Image 1 (cartoon, rainbow, N blue to C red):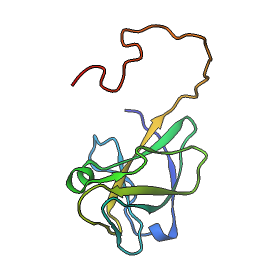
Image 2: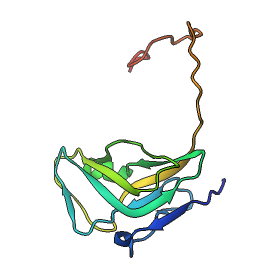
Image 3: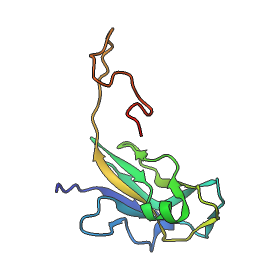
Length: 149
């Protein structure tokens, strides 16, 4: 497994929180915590922009992806609204998480709660080439259920 050093800065309202960490030795995502000063209640079918109390310097050639935590999704219907959220290498603002409550009950976010996971992934810079026709495939333009249930 490749190691990547990434700099991050703790903001004043993030002081005292655990840093983003892997839950286990084989976890892929770093747990990101809520740096809220007071509890935040997210009503059903609503969303909230939550601070993490940190900034990150994503290396060039990578993106940081903010993804839901499976336990919150299964147990409470709480998701990251723009899954995955992307943090670009040139962004230096606070890492924020948009949590959305798709469950039937209000969901309370408390300080230090693990609200999302962050994954750093390599990206490619693409050059689009306009053509008159694309090559044929067995699938063709079939989509949205083309392969059956």
